[in-house]
Image 1 (tube, rainbow, N blue to C red):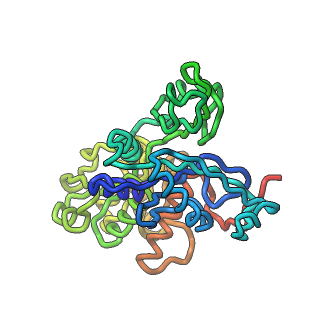
Image 2: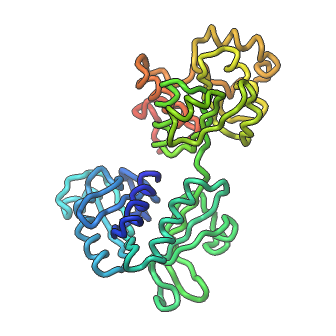
Length: 351
């Protein structure tokens, strides 16, 4: 989503048009699921992916039509075994997708472009879940035009569609007496990651986590290092060891990597008191045992102890700083998505 936001912001500043392509329905298997987006620029370049490269070149032709006509458009792709030869792509995904193409043109329609940019930016900072509703088709375009969209609370959206909305869904409904096809997309706050430490490993982890759409904050008393190594990150300057002043909300993810035993103990203690969902500690098992002597009042609680991940990361044999960063991010992602983190080939397929 950050990649999309940055691309839209650049288009907005340069007054340059582009097309936002969004998957609004998937049947069967697909490279991406509902809600995945890419940007298609007027020069043919594409930012992001909604497939493994299968449909992007075809979408480009439709995007030119959308830009010239200033009108959104739905495109259907069917890659089921019997229809795959129609496209001549030999994808073999055995799935079908619907893609919604929407023009973003700050010159022709500044208000609509501002609405699209505002929505994408809001997803990066919101602390409250909501449902984003987009009109795809309508029986009365003059009353309710395709491309109309708005935010709604979860309960309000579920009343409108008369069903639970736990994942993006394309549905028929009625809005103010007008029959409409609506794409309802639940939006959740991005996970918040607090990193304690200012070393090169912390800088690498913060950047990669940011690229994966985590809301990253770096906490330290070393203000000069924060300014030097984290110029584009949210940084929190504290007095040495006074982590309570960081005012972390409950449910955050924390990675402790100060490379200082005293500071690490204080950071972990504060994460316990805050009610962090995940506490990753860089270091060996022996180091964790040393820390546990001081943190015994927390570590004696099985529920709290289960939140501690040390040594932090998945077991991929990581050795280099880059591999260690990958290992940590993989575990963070697995925990966030409530997965075990094992090989996909060993995941049982539901019959």
